[in-house]
Length: 166
Image 1 (cartoon, one colour):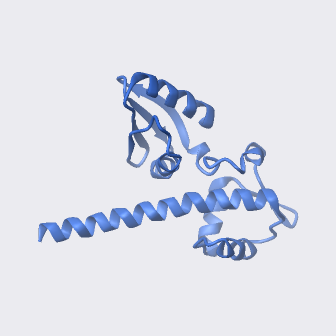
Image 2 (image 1 turned 90 degrees about the vertical axis):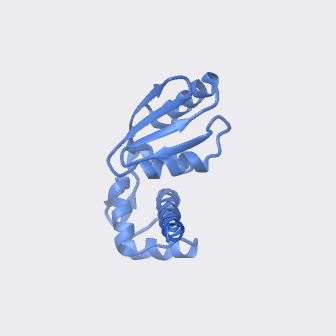
Image 3 (image 1 turned 180 degrees about the vertical axis):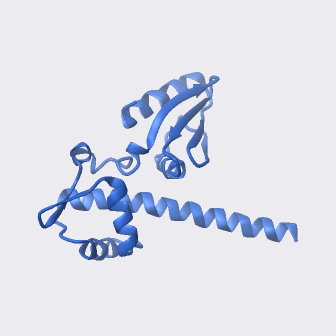
């Protein structure tokens, strides 16, 4: 029984991670689409996302637009000024979520994020495949990032500061 319960729990975590990754990728696509073309309404954006292989509904797109800070100007959506140059940045969808970067010892870097956003940021970090990152663990508002060597931690800290502007 325990083994079956464990397998079921692992399936839930795998599904949740895939869902979070999908959300981060969809938000990055939204920023790119709005930065490159004229999008007049949410239905139009949902259709474009579907054509690009994303799972999207009007409610998920509405939430994404709100959290990304996208505004409606006249008859089209526009990017916030700070994100306009970042549409090709895979971290553009999560950059505003990171509040603080700290180190703990010589091989652990800790990111503090807005509540409920740590997993999205961790997925972006994991998917970047940086050589200095051994792995990440995320909670609701905190991410632990492990590195092998102090030099790797320093490289990671500088990289994160550049990406998140902290």
